[in-house]
Amino acid sequence: MLFGPAQTNNVAVTARIYGTGKGRRYPAFGVGLGGVNGFKLRISPGKKALELHKGETEVQRVPFDWQSGQWTRFHLQLRESPAGESVVEGKAWTEGTPEPAEWLILHVERTPPRPGRAALWGAPYADTPDPL
Image 1: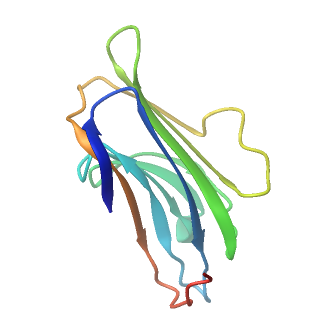
Image 2: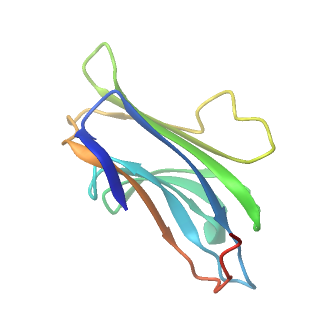
């Protein structure tokens, strides 16, 4: 789902997402900035990772211990540095635990971003009913 105005820099998106795993099937979900081909911060529970993608290309990956059946909070921002580069910063954490003080993902993009909307997306693989 795309939403909000199309922007390039100095923009952020936050979200709270619920997901469950079943056996070895897990959802994949996250938030994005810059439209369909922009940056996506996503959790891949099967890889035990928090990933940053630009379009379909993985840019960075860090370990992440996702908790099935718990709400997960996301914060992704894209800002312009004093040198004119775009800095992409992201973090995720399980609701009820402290928000990480530092960014878990930090990427400097030298190519100016194209304008695009914020995004929310998910792929539910576990066939778990909606908790709401």
